[in-house]
Length: 140
Image 1 (cartoon, rainbow, N blue to C red):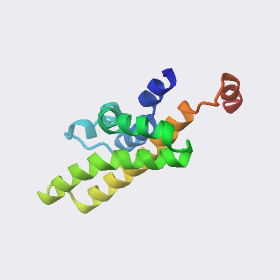
Image 2: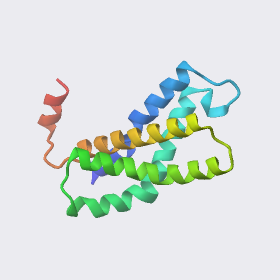
Image 3: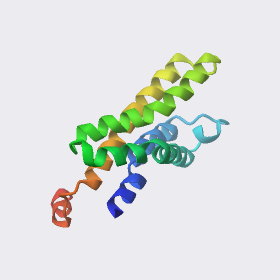
Image 4: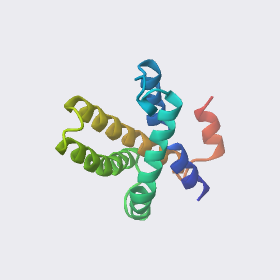
């Protein structure tokens, strides 16, 4: 159970870090979270945590016993989990003309790839046959 909690907390970090690097390199002055890399990191993590609570927890509970535990399966599930709410929000913004095609494509790629990586990180952390000695060998 501890691994699942840690996995849910750590899974958004790679995506949040990538987006934060982009904001650090190309800040948009006067645009709130787009101005500070730390704010963007927290925002992306919070978005992922909300999506995890609403969508990912029920999907995980359904997947854990029924489907084979593969990194690709969890990656695809993570990608779909993040895309469901993001696509709904982007569609609403697109229908009102509040987002450009470039921003739409960027957000879809960011959240699809980020969801895949989050699912893969989640799989790696919660992998049951993993032991402490396996972790030591992984990081040596």
